[in-house]
Length: 214
Image 1 (cartoon, one colour):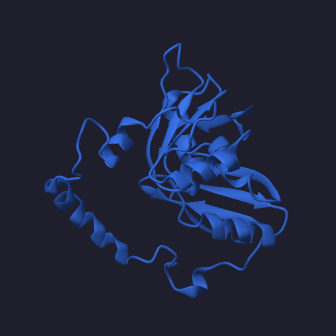
Image 2 (tube, rainbow, N blue to C red):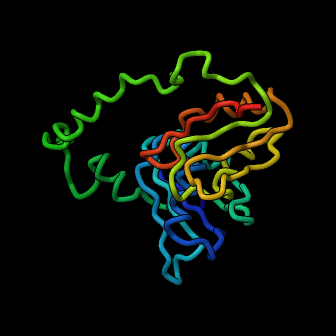
């Protein structure tokens, strides 16, 4: 019996040795390219080991994620993905189907809390400090900055190996916030740079990508 598409995807065959927090961050890193993620649920109970749920805001996002990432090698094991059997509580509440609430009334306090946060949009995420001359000439090595503390080589490899020409990730000893990623040539590194510029590995860290200094 086919399960009809919904906002939540169910993933199993995950590597059970990976710690829960690292697993959630890695799932966020590779799935947030498909759209806004509302929540990731990964439980470490015996029954739920090796499984996770990723809840997207839009059904289109979950559909694209399911098609694109089916069988993706995640910590050396191919992911098995399907739609979850029912809406998660988060989605039910958004739709108003959680309990019986015919009216979709959103409490006003939440809006007041969100209002001040929206003022941050004035900053241009692609603006390089020091003007255009701060940008290095294109080459096959990318320099990543503003990475979260928990960044691992595995996490970055999973993010960049979806682009053709990917060779390797190099972390800098004693520095968690920067890394280098090498491609076969500057065309391939440029494509990855454009696609992942400003990519949020975590909700608070938007990755900055430039060409490395020669």
